[in-house]
Image 1 (cartoon, rainbow, N blue to C red):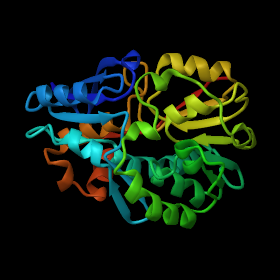
Image 2 (image 1 turned 180 degrees about the horizontal axis):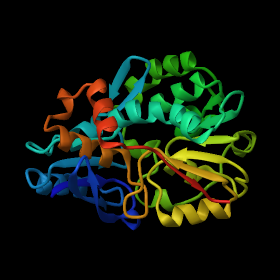
Image 3 (image 1 turned 30 degrees about the vertical axis):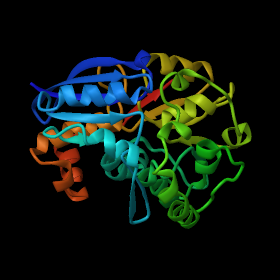
Image 4 (image 1 turned 180 degrees about the vertical axis):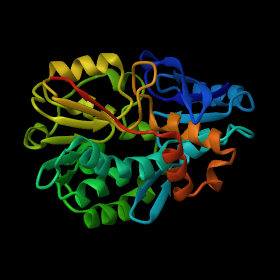
Length: 300
């Protein structure tokens, strides 16, 4: 049995362990939250190094993409460097391959129509593949990177504008602690509604679940939510808020959706390669070979 462990800067209240089969291979999958403690995360990565088949970085990004450019978070790179033998992944390759395929899959297999629908992507530089797919499907998109990441009341409406923003902001932001603009530790369990108008006007809410959960309003009636890292308790919360349909970009494992870093770890372990050796095309082939599809669940 292969093992993939996610070491997360997120809340330990969201921990989980399960087993699952991918490509005929059994996996033991585990998430360990460190409540925002980077020293504990570093120690755990050192302890897991050489003991498991892949280590996922959760509650942070190692890379973000905008257009053809990739930006590296200094703090996350330092965490990843604690592993000398075991591959460390953050899920960004999955976001840039699997999530790019989610919208066409929902159109073809579930008859969903995205054309002219208002879509709010809470943080698009973290989900650039998903953002591009929504634009390609004809959605009227709002990218909330400045609003939910930096607290600035400035929506972004085009991919060109997003790439321009990333080229200016990313070189600076990636040198700062992730906790300054992304909920880590107990902040992942806090809810402080923000920019509610953009939630209200959108038929589709997409992107990182911790941003969605933290900032969504009480009324999410009839919304389609496309996200990930959703526990059973999160599903109950979304149902209470009136969300009609939940799509998780990774499949259900043990009654919940784990982070993209877990799935990237699974595919990396299956490939037998280091993550830096895998191309986007190889990830797509692995996704197709394993039959990985998004999960669609009606809540109301």
